[in-house]
Image 1: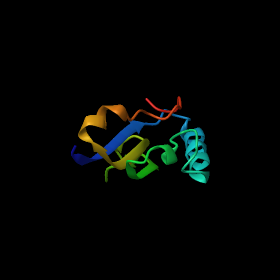
Image 2: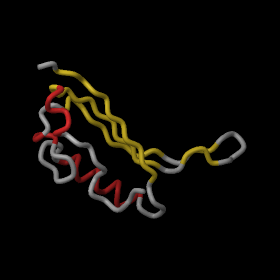
Image 3: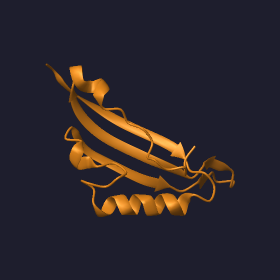
Amino acid sequence: MVTTQAAVTIMSDILPGHEVPLRQLLETANQDPANNALVPFGQLPTVHFARFFLMDATQDLQGQPLTPRSWLSSALTSTPVRCRSRWQWTRPRCSCMR
């Protein structure tokens, strides 16, 4: 059995008016990273690190939009190849994202 590592990055636009509820959801999850309802990291022993954060919308030098306000998730996992399909990353259970 070979153990491999995989970097996982997910980016999703935040629907207008939903930044505050999403920020509150992430802050609640941060209070108990190992056992929160969003992503209970204590139950994911192959996840070495993970980070969730919000990115503000950006503009170019002329004020034209470059990126919308976004939610970003990044993680590093190690999983034996035969078990990889067992761990599926999905969006948080939140209606704030597209």
